[in-house]
Length: 137
Image 1: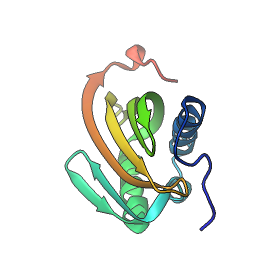
Image 2 (image 1 turned 60 degrees about the vertical axis):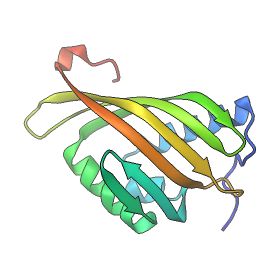
Image 3 (image 1 turned 180 degrees about the vertical axis):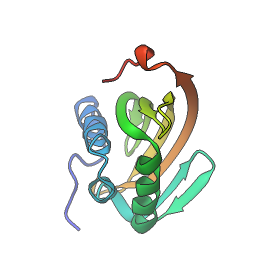
C-alpha cells in the first residue's frame, strides 16, 4: 500500500491536517472512501460495537448513514503524540421521522507507520435537539 500522508510522528501542523482530512472524508458519507484511511485489519470500538477490518467498516458506515440522515460532522484535535491522537467531535443528523440529534464525544486514534489508522475508539453521546437548534449546516 502507498503511504497515506501525513504520516507519524505527527507535528501540530500534520496532526491538524490529518484531523481535517478525516472530517472531510466522513462528511462525504461515502463508506468506501472513508474506509481507505484505515488499515486492512483496523480495529474499532464505536459505542458498544466492535468492528474489525475494512469490510466491516464499510458495512457499519452503510448502516450508520442509512439511519443518520443529513449527517454533518465537525472534528477538533485535542492532543497528539508520535502516532496517536485524541479528537473531540460533534455531528448532527435526523432520523426518518424528522427527529434531530447532536451526537458528540471523543475518539482515540492510532496510526501505522504509513499513515493509515490502525485503531479507532469512539465514545459517543446523543442529544435530541430541535432543528432550529442546529449548529452545523
